[in-house]
Every structure is written in structure tokens, then in C-alpha cells.
Amino acid sequence: MPLGLGRRKKAPLVENEEAEPIRAGMTLEGLGESAQGGLDLQPGLPPPPPNLRPRLVFHTQLAHGSPTGRIEGFSNVRELYCKIGEAFGIASSEVMFCTLNTHKVDMDKLLGGQIGLEDFIFAHIKGQRKEVDVFKSEDALGLTITDNGAGYAFIKRIKEGSIIDRIQVINVGDLIESINGHSLIGCRHYEVAKMLKELPKGKDFCVKLVEPMKAFDMISQRSGSARSASAAQLGTGRGTLRLRSKGPATVEDLPSAFEEKAIEKVDDLLESYMGIRDSELAATMVELGKDKKNPDEFAEALDETLGDFAFPDEFVFDVWGAIGDAKVGRL
Image (cartoon, helix red, strand yellow):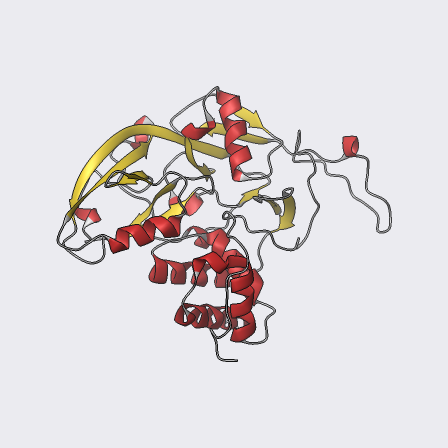
């Protein structure tokens, strides 16, 4: 069957943390107190009762400065933000995104769907609001968009020399609240990128932004590194906590060398074709494609799991090729 024939949407898109088979580790029915001192099980023995299972606690601070809090008992990003809100007495909707092991707006350290068991979580909350009029003199604005998995889309990268790069008030990390009065709260990154791309050339548009609250040493910081988030290995421990939009979180091994290379390349392709970066989406695509025998099987798997994206055939071919290259070490 030629690629693309007979393809149809079957399943609604979920958040960045797509469900996938557990690669290694255990299911966390209740997250709690200590990331150390897990219980070693002998093969064939029944699991320990819930009150004896290891409990996970993560340390967190507000990125602009705060005492250290302890959070536990979350399985997805929305629950994580609720726990952060409870720890610091703020509404969960104030949390824009989190970074791991740095308080800076560093897109290489952005928290996606995985947290290293020894990672320190810094929560970036809403700061100053700003309204900017932009004249779209070129087709491309020079923005790469991502989202936090909980309804906020924000700027992950600004291309050097682009329209947006020349507007100093717009920065990496800014939440895109609305465009021309149309609220974008609750929209996914690809929806926001599509709306920006479809804005007419040669006309002004108004964008409302919210920048993250900054610590003193972050004032005047313009942008983060140009490297992708997947290029920096998350976590300092031996495993990661995988957050999911549905079902319990799981503790898993770190990605293999093949998976890391493939995820990075697929994330680059997402940026090239769609103007977004999403390492968790890239990881899901690699997981779907690594055992498929041909691009048609891969295309059907994408439609089954990620049908709402309606990926073009050319993009699917390129992703299939990137996964194949990573398998044989050509990346």
C-alpha cells in the first residue's frame, strides 16, 4: 500500500506524555517519601504491600527564589503543578513551566514527561504581562513553540536575525496568552504554531505575552541555548520518573544511545516541519517506529496514536529515515 493511502484518524491526541509500554521499572500507585532505598525483589516473589513500597519525594523551589519545598504523589504534569501550588501557597495556574537542576530559563533543562530520580525541580511562575504589536514583514516569524502539557504554549527558541529576534521585549520562555484577542490558553503547541504561520504577511498583529518571574541574576536574559532539550540528558540518577496524562507514573531506565539520537533528530524534524519542539512527542514517535518493518506500518501506527496531528507523508518518510539511521549509527 502506498504511504498515506487508507490512513485515517482513530484516536484523540493526548498530552505530551503519550502512554507507551513500560520499558523497565515499576508502576507507582502512590508516590511518596523517599527516592532512595527501594526494595529489591527476588524473581517470582509477590510485590510488597502498598505500605512497604518505595515512595518518591522531589525537592522544588520557585525559580525566582523561595524556600525549598517537598512534593510527592503526582502522576502527570497537571498534578505536579497542583503539588507545587500546594507547597508554596499559590494557584497551580500560576506555574508556567519547570526546569530541572537550574533556576534559569534554560530550554535545554525543560521538564517534559520525565524527571530524573535525583532531579531538583524549579518552577517558573507568571511574571510581567506585556502586549506587543508585530508587523509580519516575512512569511516566517522565527519562533519555535512548545507547551507545558497543561494548557500553556510558550516560546522555546527565537531564530537569530528573524522578525521576533529584532523585537527585544519578546523572549524565550514567554507564555503566548493570545493573538489578536483570541485566547490561546488550553491550546497545544502545534495549534499555536499553525495560527502564527497563517497570519497574513504585510499586516500587523497583536500578541499578549506573560514572561516568567525572574530572579535578580536573570534580569536582561534574552534567550536560552539553541540546542534542543533532548540533546541534554535529563536526570542525574539511574532512572527517570515518566509522567503520563492517563494512568500511573512509572520508573524507567534512561533512554538508550539509539533512542537519544533518534529522539533528537525527530525533534529537529518537528521544528523544521511544524515549528514546534517536543521531546516527549519525538520519544513517542521513536517508540512507535523502532519495531516497525516498513514506513506504511509506521504511518498506520502514527495515525492510530497521533492522528490529530495529520502528519504529511513527506514528514513521516523523513522520521522513518531518521529512526533507521539511528539504528545503524548514521546520525
